[in-house]
Image (tube, rainbow, N blue to C red):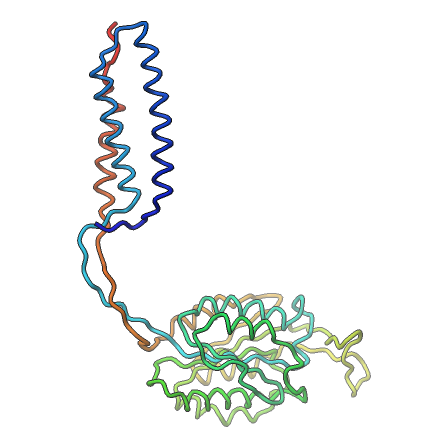
Length: 321
């Protein structure tokens, strides 16, 4: 017999509590026996009855499973590169405490939800770099996410083609067998893309790579902090205002059959992004055989309830009147 919840301490404490309560119950009848004539064999019957359904309740609580069989469990996974924009505009504070800090918070939750998948991290601005290769190691991913800041990459504009080309190259050079699901989660405020990224769309589609873009920012935007001041717009000599630009992010997602999601003052769609990724068909990364058995707790529970009902509805008289 296999037990679903073999927590010995819990069962021991339940037995101790029952024993103490029932000792009080028996002591009460002992005091009565000094003054009244008590049918001792009836007390014994009640004790056996209650002890029986208490034991049955404990057995049901432990979740007994009878009989075993081997069952094959297939493990499926996806390959996902997360490309994070680290241009200066990601320091804007229209989403508190800043766009980048909010991205780091959301990424920690996202990677935990996708723990069964291989995830890599690409950082970019005017250039792109692989911060973390595809890995199942959650601890390594969390360390790299904690260290994200806009000083990690050159900041001379935003070239969206660079991270997409980087992800495409890494997927194509991967020595793993062909996977059913390869995706890029592109996180950016959408500014300063230009048009050179459009040439890579056919290559992404031919390789079966979907783009799930996550826009971060608001339509009103905000200034961009730099030290104790803000970044100035040289054309107007006024503080530069960074706003969320969604058109290119939506275009990339639509052209690769992915999806566009947003974090702004109006919508919080990180959970929708995770759901969309989870719906993608993954490839079989391995299999294992496990023992499967049917939990039979219900029969023990039913027997215990029947005995308890008999004890309550048809009590045995223990005192002669």
